[in-house]
Length: 388
Image (cartoon, rainbow, N blue to C red; front, side, top):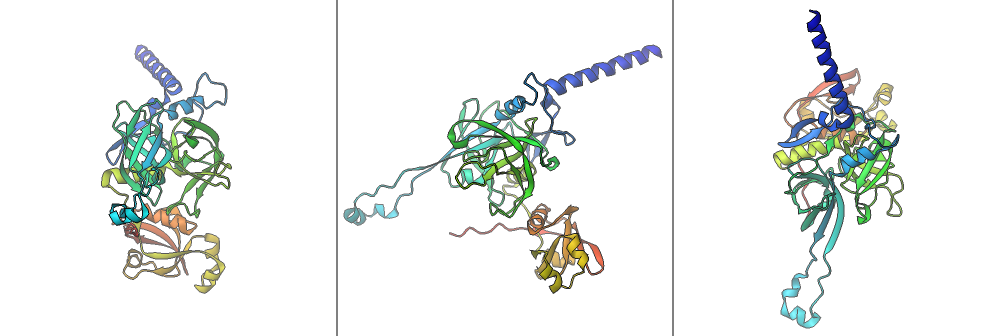
């Protein structure tokens, strides 16, 4: 018995020591592999908390995180052919006006993040929109032509793909666990000067109503983001991807310490939808929501408790729509969707869009007698038609 116990204790000691060595020197080995729409990606453990990676760098250095993440961040160069006047083919037009110079081809610059060894790259839709050619330049100087797999203008995200071997892949972090004040790094190719790493903190979470895209739930950071950074990576101190850098607030065109990134939780939904179905499928319930204010509380004769509870008031319900069929009516105040609290119209729109069409979802509604749980089966949100 004593011999068995000795053998057991020695085995446990060896395993603990091995785990400590791996966690210190190669933490990425502990990350799990999963599949999004058939695309193999790497995710950090959901319980992991961002913390500095043990290294020989000076205390407080983010060198290890920058090295890990930078390998998977690419530069994206786009070109768009000059638009030729269709009347140039008319000989009489050329006789009177001569040969018109069609102008120069338009060039664009942005960044992207390799999220799969099979070549899938996350970037912004506005980086590749309308491009005739897309060239991806890796941090190891390799280059490859990329093709667009799909775009999602509603979130300003796009997926492109390259065909190269032995691609570095970034680890997907947990943006839902972020807190204001957490340190972050922004990696991209600002102004085309080459890959650059800037540092800062999370300044705010859930930023919306900025007029950038339809579904806004931005991470705000003071890490410097400049033109060319769009589509690049916002990472934690372990080098795990937290967001896709998208926009800046600026009066001069340069960084003023206010940048916005799309959370990786949103990016994962877009990646899975585009690769699996060719598009992102979102929920829709057919309501007209408005921000709760004193005038609406008085108009709908709501109790004072409604103002304290917060939420979004429904001023109109589409006849025979999903919400109407579920029992939602004008004057209801929706405070939660599928267990997720909603405090404004943008949050309600995002929460409903995340629902799976055809699958009933619980919604918490305030009425005269207090909170009521209603099950609503969302329909499919149609993409807006492009006006030509």
